[in-house]
Image 1 (cartoon, rainbow, N blue to C red):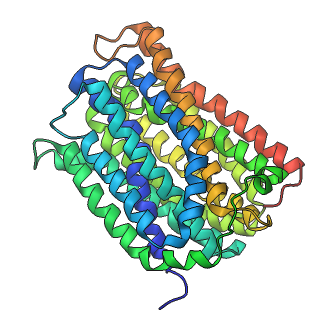
Image 2: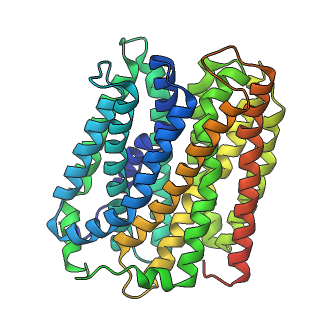
Length: 411
């Protein structure tokens, strides 16, 4: 038996995680708004509550992941089952509870299973490929698979629509199949971890390291722009651009561009200073995306170009940040890898929680209501929230990158 799994198996795991990640923020709120006429404010509050659950449970799941790593693959299978059942329930054509309660419970199952798998997948990668060069290659492959998974999840409901009455449920079924195949691909290597898991799980070696603390802050701050745009994307395309039928292709263009660009960013980060490369990618992302604020109804071609260009800059975020965090983590003695990635997931989920509780209620407060005829003021609020707010947040993340760089954090 090989001592470690081939990297391409992590690409399939990344694909599975991508199918369960950002698309939930794209599909689920609009699906429940359209199907059950739930208000944006109520959906935003529920998402915030669920993100709050994740904020609390992710470090706990990191501890559980570390404690159960010696049990072989069964914790991975259990988490996959929970996540798959949650996904099927989320998009089920038949629900057995009030829509908001059903939305809350099914998403909680998806998030919990996803979080555990995310932590274990990243910790397994660092365990099997600990050196900097291998980790950068692994990150490129894993995040490339992640982006491909996002693309598949974005287009799946549209692709299934001609063949079935419930295309979102068809996506959920396809996801369950992919998830079981992905976990089966690494199950036999999961048992190797028991030899290296420390008997105690202590977060202090992670939190005492100045570089890891700074990278955790950067990870959370840099996740905010994506959290905002992913929450509002479908609403912006349908109501601001009047191009709801183009949502799937536009998403494909965005994430496919990120996947194609990932190898380039990985190569640049290996050849030059990773933080300098990341900073330039952030500058380019703001330059490309800020023009979305000026778009009006029918400007589909311009928005498609913005999606492709800004998607190309996303590849840097996806590849460089996790790899830099993994490399720095490998240098910290007595640090639990599972707990560290639990904290990494924690800061990302915190960003999503902040976006959920602020963005949807804010655009509703300023007059945007998808269940009524959009007003001029509501559309203006939507444009500001979707295009300008993420650019300001990205500039704040850029400032954090230069702060880390000045502090001589190793890349």
